[in-house]
Image 1 (cartoon, rainbow, N blue to C red):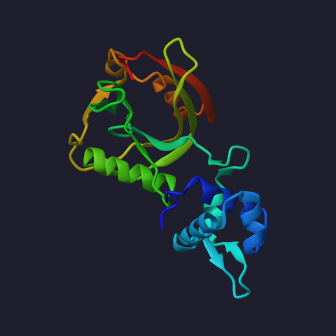
Image 2: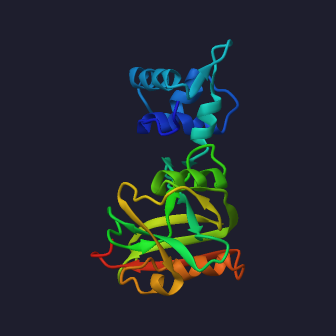
Length: 234
């Protein structure tokens, strides 16, 4: 079962109680949640059906392995699942070992429609960093390669002249100097081999481009920065 399962607020309250107990009886759980008997029984039964809670042989309740993982994401003050940064890989792909041209990608979907930058992609559950990089490269460009991991780039994306946080993104920086295959355009993107000077000429370019380059060049291992985007950009 996916940990993205939908959980009612009342069920979240039950999970919170079990987070701090090895096991608990029916009455021990019902009282702190403040739920009436029928409502409490319904939501407790739903948690068992979803595989988040188990009933022991002694008639007590405990978090399942899945339930422990889910409940561990709870903000116990607000009783909600904590939002976390989006984890992605950035692919710095040189055409060959001379490093005279690299792969740049124009994003043809929202947000950031029309922006040029390095190919990126979200990591999937259970992947290693280099596995995620190789998969994203194949899916978006038709190329295959083996990647090296260099460092981390953490970006907070804000509305222009505002404190409104649009995105919280954690990028794992990877690179390669050897690819195989024929470069293709992907769904929602256009791919091109360009020189470093040509890459600097793009009118709409992601602001983290130079930061990523510094990490690749071993100037930094980890960089955090704020980026501000206008409504037209985002």
